[in-house]
Image (tube, rainbow, N blue to C red):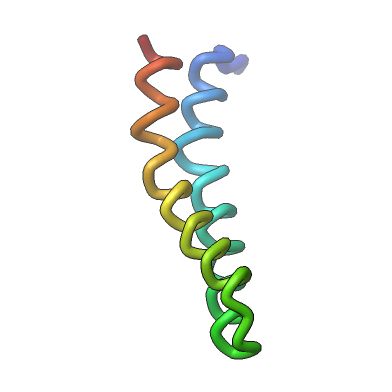
Length: 64
């Protein structure tokens, strides 16, 4: 069964990329706090926020 590119792209931007970015963000937050590196902490927070907001910004353009 072949899936359309619309289905694959919406799945990619709603269920695959955000959890990966959020996981990396949490790792950076934990590393930044434990090692007292503010850049890692800030980068982790920004990455986590991007992971949460990205589906609401990108998917309306993809789904029309």
